[in-house]
Image (tube, rainbow, N blue to C red; front, side, top):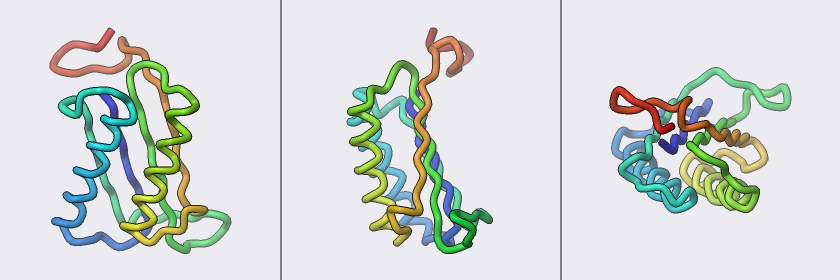
Length: 117
């Protein structure tokens, strides 16, 4: 049920590097949300045409969704952790990374022909 999607304007890294990043993000998101990693989904999309502050310099958008309510302490910790990870992996400056956190009602999140609420 937790999901982290990363969209960036930078060139696509090697497949093995992307897979490694996705595994790291998966483990970290499970830890931050307290949800089993067996429910975590990750996605990565590179070479997305993007601008930030009116320029096409490297930029990244991260979307994090989860069933239930994320507390401000959680989102602050995730912002710090995921900005650092993306900065190190993609060399995107932290001040060019936006993160969006979205809580979902269980009834609005489907899986395995049912929903979580």
